[in-house]
Amino acid sequence: MNLDIDGWLRSLGLERYEATFRENEIDETVLPNLTAEDLKDLGVGIVGHRRKLLDAIAALRTDDNATAPAPDAVLTHGKAPTDTAERRQVTVMFSDLVGSTALSARMDPEDLREVISAYQKCVAETVRRFGGFVAKYMGDGVLVYFGYPQAHEDDAAQAVRAGLELIGAVSSLKHDAPLQTRVGIATGLVVVGDLIGSGEAQERGIVGETPNLAARVQGLAQPNMVVIADSTRRLLGNLFELQDLGPKELNGITGPVRVFAALRASSAEGRFEALHASGLTELVGREEELEILLRRSLKAKAGEGQVVLLSGEAGIGKSRLTAALLERLAAEPHTRLRYFCSPQHTDSALYPIVTQMERAAGLAHDDTPEARLDKLDAVLAQTSTRIEDVALFAEMLSLPNDGRYPAIELTPEQRRQRTLEALTEQLEGWQAKIRC
Image 1 (cartoon, helix red, strand yellow):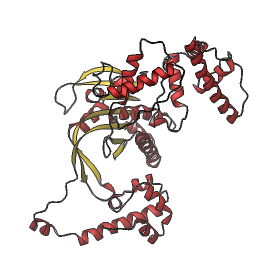
Image 2: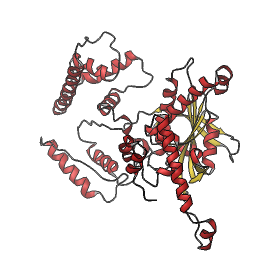
Image 3: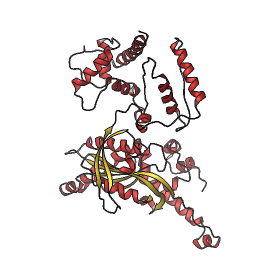
Image 4: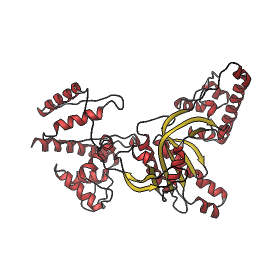
């Protein structure tokens, strides 16, 4: 099928969606497989428009079938239908709404439908931010793949982050009583991609033990808990704080499976360190690059400021090269300031600075507000930071002012500008401290 998508939309009187379809790369190969849920995700919020699009898509499928060769003709030429299924490693998440049976007993079906719909939408929005693919809705449960259709090197970690985020997101949904969810996660080799069903019920099937394991692991979770199988834990390094729940016998799974409760992201300084906690491999073939970095370091020590950009494909060894530089400089007096961006915090420009300051102050998740402020005061005292600036930093870190700092009366724009100035002065303070 060779179809002009823009012209097709215009023929339906729905040209308003042309830009949306282009931005989401909806072409003639994708269009016939769009479902009602996909159209909602694309922003087609008007029911009549969705119905018109679904009818037109169904007509396209009919036209394709009418021009396709008959099964006998395919056999005659010895050609089998294209098999789009593939073998790959996937992290599977099962999310289940807690207490849905009790809700169904005391709620009107239409009200229950709204609750389930809100829950499903919450799950879909949350996991998609972390690269998850919603494969199927099953009543009050949702099946999600990480690593399909697009694979990423951190799919297992993203699944756990999504699970932890999901607990808070579901709890914040407005309802008479707080809603809770259970999450189970497992990783393994599967065959994924077979089309099962037809029309709006069509889904990408997955074959292997991993979905069953994820479902069984989810059954071990307490309300508002993320439980992961050992197959996922082995891919996480020290990225998360985990509670070992021990080996468990699971129905349909051969042998005991060790499972863990994911509590929260760890305080590891960086992803590279968290994934290489047991030690680094020897640096090979990067002597020239390392020498360049060392020469730039010598110039910086002599007072000639330097900036070096390391760029390259993921996995090429950028972080390992940086670690080697730090090893060579370990015996020399220096102050290391490290800032890490995150694809999950692109809407927060100061996120790298906030996390660096939290690490520098040694803030822990179980610290009291007073203890957190005490730690912040201690680390900022090293650069003789003015108390007004400390107040700005405390606010930036979402720490309450217990009266130890003066109240700051500034407009949002003034507050932003003053915070940036204070951060610049903070760096200058560290520079002065190093010179001393």
